[in-house]
Length: 340
Image 1 (tube, rainbow, N blue to C red):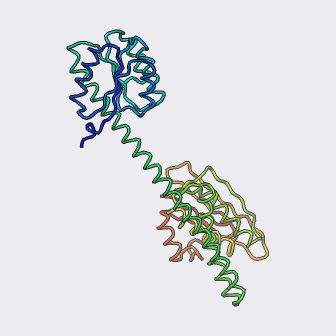
Image 2: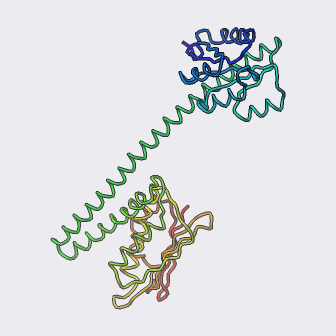
Image 3: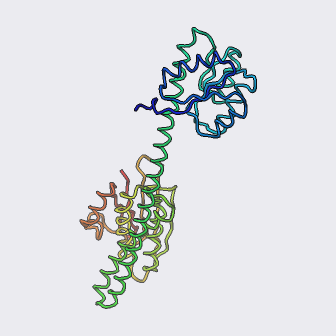
């Protein structure tokens, strides 16, 4: 059975029986199994609309007991997607334009020469309405699928965040049972997990499942670290929001954690307080994150402690960043992460 064979309800609203017969003949050619309803007054018309959704309405403009504009308005008010074609011997182009603006699908002048156009107009109006209905149903299905996906992904992020918190708690408990050197390693592992947790928390907090406000996550990471190394003042100078996809934000968070941790551990003598500044610059083609300290600095020709490790190189590659380090003895260190 074709889509047209499945058509069941057509309303023909015209008080002229000869004109209704012309319309019915064209409809019989197009829709062989359709039910054609011909209301004779307002009560029958209202009852036909109330009974079920029509698949097509064909109406005259001047009707003894109503008019085409009222028919169009009543149909569209109840069933906005229902196609309506006007087949009339009265009216003019101005009226046709106004009716089309109100939702009329086509306007055909009553004339034997116009019957082929009427048939084409009826078929086109039906086909367009059926295609529109199919698209609407598909859109609703896609919206439901996206909502379901978002629910699943949101639950996944929530569970990952909780699991990370559980792992940090276990590390803290275990750290109390080992020697100081081992506990320091546990603390660094906990810090890396916390950096991942900062990104996860930002995903869940703002409801974005694909992107992360990395500036906010970077603030969370740096605040946690500077509370541990409380000899440092933290400044932030963010030139604007930096939104990154989750897959890139995760390794970048770990990379920033390693660089900040290295600065807090090595930039200042134990007896001296220092200042750590985080900057985000997004005005250029390649956004930059700068991590600056006013510490002792070092000779860049020497081995960079903590920055030349395999972990840092791997994270930089995964996050797609270039690392540039500027430093000299007594003048602090600036590490620039350029997102390429």
